[in-house]
Image (cartoon, rainbow, N blue to C red; front, top):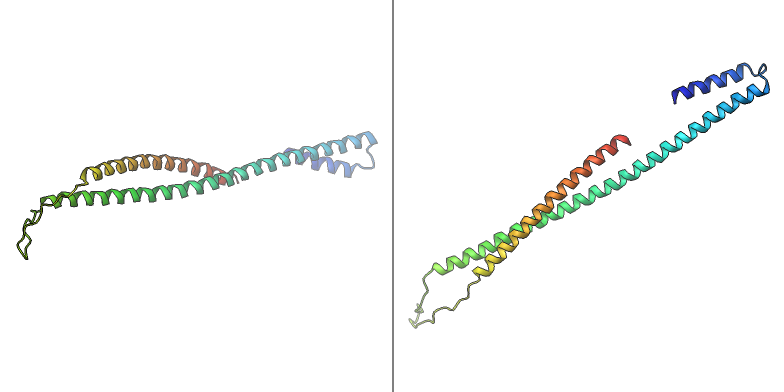
Length: 167
């Protein structure tokens, strides 16, 4: 492009310096050359503007995808925290049930010394353990999804950083 610019200046100078001495065909050839230069420059600028518009569109799209990915990761991490809390709660219940079984059963009422029926208490330990396993499996799957999304976010950040450089 600088070469064309130099040629354009030389043509303009030649036209202005030799305007009176040039015949019409020489003058027309110089003007045609200048017109071609302007046309080529205009086409080059259009291509650059189109490329810039495309880069801007990619930048905006990547920026939006990156924000969505960050929001998704934030929500997935909140869900992970909820699963961890659920596991802790369920383990607390199971441990309470287990410890409750170790206490001796009172068969005589302490105030009137009448006999009490032995407690017929259902235990939910097995159900709670199954629920813990199910929640732990969900947590494991969620962690895999989080890792996948972290990799996706890193890819988007890399693309975004390249787009920032070009814009």
